[in-house]
Image (cartoon, rainbow, N blue to C red; front, side):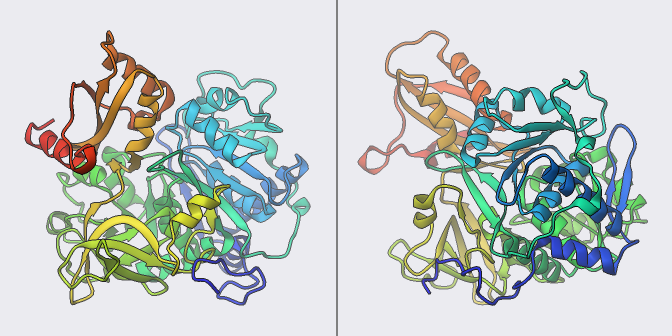
Length: 529
């Protein structure tokens, strides 16, 4: 079997005869009265679900989806921030055999329209604040359902009569359809920022979800008495796979916040006796100056590839470096518990993935030498199934031996540790979001009369990077920078909009006239921009 070919549906593997609904049903039977989800909004009333209660609500919404014409294989848009309805809808689609298409709530209308068109969604579930955007997409949805609050906050306007309330999706749980488990069937779609073109829809199978759940729980060493504070967006892999699915496999509890709040963080950690959470650069910068309450029960923090020493020294907690992507479903490189790693160390390769680091000519690097990070797993299980409707992109991301190119440069060491060096792909890291420079450049080029555009990341104390655009116009244009910013605000999510636009007559070059983005980044760092 070629290494980049997905397993046949009939193949025997770790998840044969199992799917994501099987996992929820198993835990609901084994731990019916144990809390699975604790919802703590910043406005309005909170709520909690035991495993049995959550499974029951999932079954009721599954029945409601079926009653409104959704069948297995249909795709349903879930355009929601962090809230219980997100998770209930996600698992209800999974139980029905439908496919949850989860999208970034900061997407522009133009971006969201592309996601909806590309995925051919048949229905949409959203919240009051986002309803106008969903209704304006020009998509002929069978129906749109809207939550009663904006992540706990009361809506600013009444719900239109032609829009269902989310509560209308609840039906008799006994009417929920049953189906045989299909582990290799698609379960969900997440869109990743495209480096050369439009964003790509990453398809996860049920086996992918189970892999993420099982591997995450094992690697993180979490158990039924562990509690995770989840504030990162559920439409991202870290919150969905690393936090939620891993917790589900372990039988633990998640405490869900609408978003990150530094002022509420430690209170929630202490009150709910949270034992772990995932941190990213901008959240940790906000927290590191706060004292850690002595009453907390935190065991560890997952940090990704970063300088973990400051956090470890300030709080005296175990810190886990790691690496993963939407395409890899879960963590592929991770530090071991209790292990003190190098600065920017990600850890060691995770069982179930092959890792190699190569030079430009494809030969493997020596220890201590930087190179291109490549990964190999099984598509549909440890690697994503495909890019939705884009076989060309799916084929291009693997070589003939099945190695997936991550677009990152790393350095391996003799003790097995791997250090993150830099992103190769033209990507920016804006807070918790990955942003392709090509997406922003495409929008600017679309204005016309633009000779060249270069978007690079400028250092930012809180967000790590923010986009900055350099533009060479074909002719003099009045207020060009302002018009570019206006177009970007119209067509791009807010975090993708350049913070500054520089209209210039020339740009630094490397060989063959290619723009020297490395030098542009260096200049921004030197001028403190």
